[in-house]
Image (cartoon, rainbow, N blue to C red; front, side):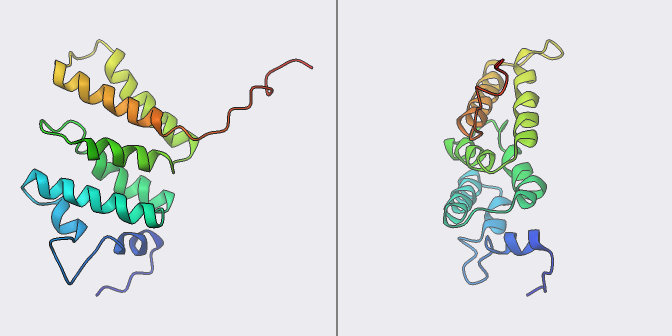
Length: 144
């Protein structure tokens, strides 16, 4: 076992299972079969529900992994569930950047999306919106 001093790497260590590769996140997330990759995402969701991952771990490792599945030809609802789970932990700036990035894909004319891609991007923006967890202060801009 590697000595991990880095907080992010220690956080990711929870996803490992040296005794059973069938439930090891890293073994399954890189597997050629889709159902094994989705199994890894389900395992991530269970582990995160027990104890949330750190924001830096999410930004640097987990969010890129989950986002890599968004435009898969065969995607599963677990991808969007995991995205919502991650976005519930993200700070406002990162959450907003992520939303704008995907929303622009829907509204820009730079490239034409086919119907399947539009559905994926729409589900992605919906997953990000579902994760909205910020307090709205409606009195902030009111005149006294």
